[in-house]
Structures are given as C-alpha cells and as structure tokens.
Image (cartoon, rainbow, N blue to C red; front, top):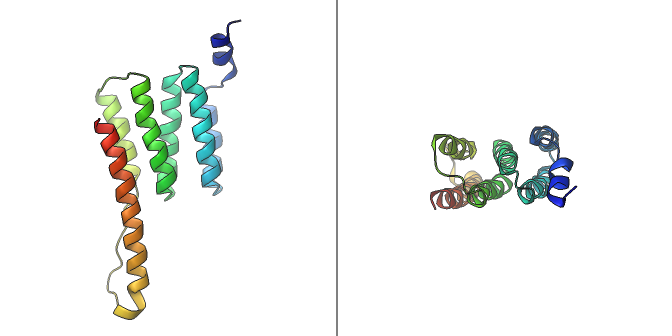
Length: 147
C-alpha cells in the first residue's frame, strides 16, 4: 500500500474527531482542544483531505468562539482560511456561508452600563481589553478571508 493510501486509511471520518473535540471544549480544556484541532487538521491536510480539515477547523473555531475563547477560536479561524487557500477552493456561496458562520461566532463584548466612576473603572478597563482582543482577532480573520 502506498504511503498516500496508508495516510488516507488511518484517519477516521472528521465527524468522529469533531464530536470528541467538542466534548473536550465543553469540559473547559480550551487550550488542549485547540492543540488537538491544529494537529488533527494538519493530518487531514497532509493527506489532502481538505474538506474534512475544513469541517474540523470550522467546527473548532465556532465552538471555541461560542465559549468565549477568542484567541483559540481566532487562530483556528485563520487556519480555516489558510486551508481554503491550500485546497485552492474557489469562492462560492457555500464558502461565504462558512466564513459568515465563523464571523458570527465571534462573541460580542458588552460594555457595562450605569457605571460609578471609582467602583467601575476596573470593569470598564476589562471590557475594553476584551473588546480589543475580539476586534483584533476578528479583523485578522476577515483580512485573511478577503485576500
């Protein structure tokens, strides 16, 4: 059996990994899950199973973002866009829908309302910091997707 065929045979369907990794995220092991998403998607990419790699990365980006993990989710979102390029996938409505789904998963950061100056400066500072991380991560994803 050729090495290429061996690589293809060893990897399970992407949905098996998606289900396992969603459980890891739901258990709160965000960083561990991110590392697994990256390594497993790299295996699919090296086996030229781009569709499955994209499914895995989209799922990972969305679930991380839905759990408020902007840095982890944003990194997986960027890997999703990079994989679109490696796979030479052309722009179409399905691709746009997938990108839009990831974009919509980026959490919205509400600013605190009705603040008192002394007590709430810490809240304002934390909210602005979270908003800055979200904006930077989301804009990096959007810039990469537009390219």
